[in-house]
Length: 280
Image (cartoon, rainbow, N blue to C red; front, side, top):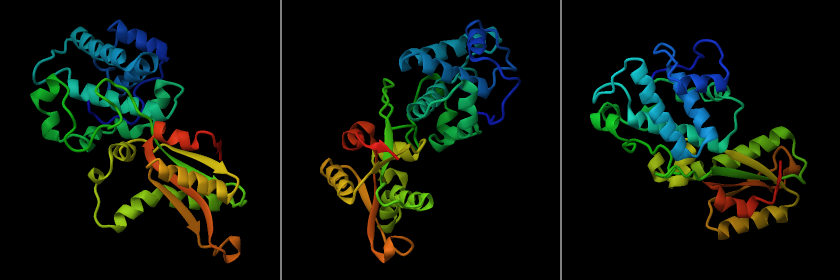
C-alpha cells in the first residue's frame, strides 16, 4: 500500500466484483493503482476471507501487480510490508465496529484513513522510511495500531455502552446531553487528576480512543434497574460512571440518576452485563 492523500474518489465508480477481478488478473494500470484502490481491494478481501488469508491475498496481489506494471520491489522502493499490514489492520478494526455496503462506501465514510500521513499517528516517519519496515512488518513506535488486533489477526470488539433510563420520559435533547456526560466521564475523571496521554489508558481504551469510538445505547425502565446494572459492572471490574442530573431543567429540581456509561472495554466483558437490554 501507499501513504498518499486521496480522500476524493479517483476515476469513475466501478463494481466491486469487477475491480477485484481486474486486480487478480493484474489488469489495473500503474496510473489507476491509487491509494484509494489499495483500500478498496483490502476491504474486499477482508470482507470475504479470514484475516490471515486476506492479508496474504493483498500482499501477493500487490507484488504481482507491481511486476505487471514494471515496478521493481527493492530495499528502497516498491512494495512496503509495514504500510500494507498496518493499513490492513486499521481497515480490519473499522470493519469490526461498523458495516458498509461497498468498498466505495467504506472509503467515503473513512476519509481519515485516506489522508496523507494517516500512519504518522502511529509511526514515526523515520521508522516508516526504514528498509526494515519496507522488508518486514514492524510494530508502531508512536501509538499502537490497535491493541485489540493480535498478531494472528484475531479482533476483540471494543465498545462503550450507554444505559439510559427510559422511564423518566426525558426530551431527546436531554437524553443526548446526559449520554454525552456519561461517554466523557472516563476521560474527564482522568483529566481532573492531572495531565494525561493515551499511554495512561489500558489497551482496550487505547484501541477505542485510536479507532472508531463504537458506542451502543441501551435503556432500562427504572432507577433500580439502572443501579443494578451499575453494581454488576462494578463487580465485574469494569469502568462504569453513573450520571446524576442536578434537576435544574427537568425533574422539578430533584437530583436524579439518569444514565451510566460502561467502558470502553472489550465486548466480551461488557455483553454479560448489558447484552439483554433493549436498544434505546
